[in-house]
Image (tube, rainbow, N blue to C red; front, top):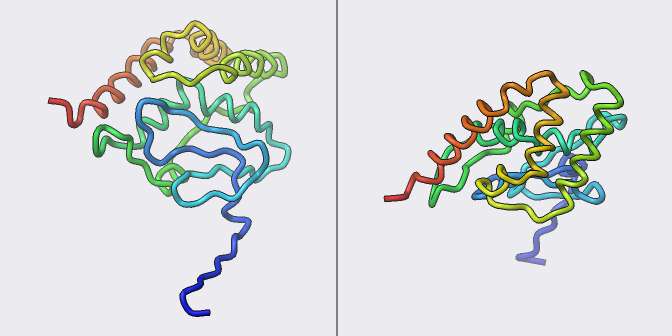
Amino acid sequence: SKGEYWYTMSDSRMADLVASMNFDRRIFVAKLDTRSFVDQRLTRFTLLNPNTDIELAHALLNSLLGIFFIESLGFGRGLGALDLSSTRMKKYLKMLNPSLLTSEQIVDIKSKFNLFKNRDIKDITEELEDPIRIDFDNTILSAYGIESLYDSIKNSFLFLYTMRTNVNAE
């Protein structure tokens, strides 16, 4: 009848992981319990290879380097919210290469990530001081042989975050 609209959901809108397009004081990628439909307010990540280790990808995207990559893709807008587009994320977001890890490193990273994800998400400044978070991030950076870059990555991330959140501060 007039005024009714029917939409079909295509498989192209299915997601395994999602991220906000407007982060504020928390930056994280969420894993859905089951592949689900999402709308345009979320950036969707859909596994193309069924052999992909979703738990490992989830961990790597939520690492210090992962959230630094997310922060660096956006800009501050309206009360300091991080403005991102799905297109920009799809085109430019990078993730550490999981195929460079040994099976022991993967087990270690996933074990540390389980401790990390089974607690409340904190504001960025608190988050980066949490010992569980620090151990998780150092485990990942060590696995890739770049643990010496921890302070540089953290300070660069905090610089971008502070610049964004101070957009409207006076």
